[in-house]
Length: 334
Image (cartoon, rainbow, N blue to C red; front, side, top):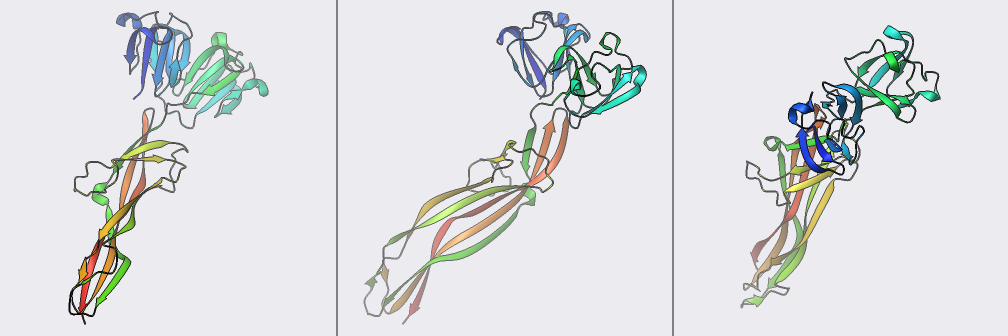
């Protein structure tokens, strides 16, 4: 969700309004020239001192602003809708895109090169940019956006010293387990074997403890595709609740994934197993302790949204469950 919340007073106090699309004239909403603080979620917004996106602009990327430029002097708001990945702008030394040119794809202080106070026009190939009068993001600004080339700067001519691309808000990831494509495998492993022999004609007490304790575990893990473009530190959650095929994982309802971490969680528990109390006459009794080990692999569809743009990747969730322990009794007459 891309939205802006504006407040009447600084520090997010007083009356407030919330907007999710452009507002050409705040006077129509009884909120003109009264904004003193704001919060932005998602893509950046441009606030203008005049109606219909005129006057002086100020740019606000995702975050909280306890005070604003042009306090009590904002009359229109515009949401930046461009794809802000891989930005590029071309500056021209002369009007109408003539003369020397400079292609930029990142924030640049023009005073460190030979194009300071030289630009007279520009074309934006990708993204949205802020053009500053002075270095270190100082002075008056212009907002440059893809599809809105400017052939002549007017008063801004030969006055640009700093350039930076706008950044989108935090990336959001929606993770969906594709239960209909899950794969299961099950194997049974003997983890202990206990034998008792009764050569007599009377039932004998089993010569071992009546209960034994074993360790069981459930291990969950997630693997990204080799081609993933998800950045390090990005977190999201897998909801394991509500499988329509009634498959029960016996794990928590949510599994948290973080790019760059091991994304593996193991839960261990102690499991007590009851053994028989006695052995029949002239019988050899073998008790096998069995652990059922189930492995479930489920593809995960990841819908990655940044601003107004989404793409799909795939990952894989795996659960290895080995906490089902039972006993098997075999009697052999002597």
